[in-house]
Figure 1: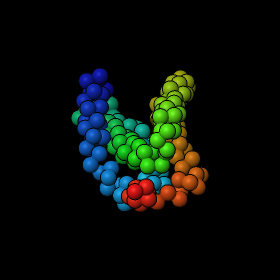
Figure 2: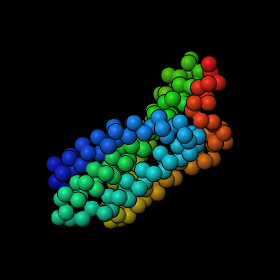
Figure 3: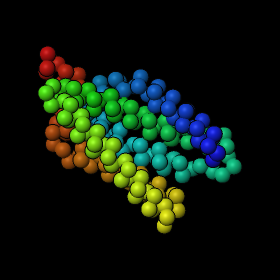
Figure 4: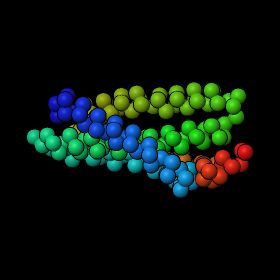
Length: 166
């Protein structure tokens, strides 16, 4: 794909991600946090695998497919952030909110360069599809802490948490 095609696909994905914000309240109002978190952490793996369907010479379908893949990824991230930020504001004491946010950002943003470096090394030895499959597996595995966390599994709906603090 040319840089312009990737850019157009990225713009399409960004628009889809922004539009998904309309669905975020619906998700967090209907699903307990453990379910919403598991879905929004694991489902982006499908976006990575969707990129395996790109076909040389198929400009329009490649731009659409990449745009949809990036949009699906962005949608998961946007829905996730909507809920996690709300959970943080509802559950973390005000005096610890800044420290918690800083630690959370270091952890979540700090893992990205590690994954990128690992993908770069793997790309030296494996075909692109295998690297995307490995990355997708890593995305799915990233949700394991949620399933293992009793505290997260026991969280009620966000609306019920909010009522408890009134």
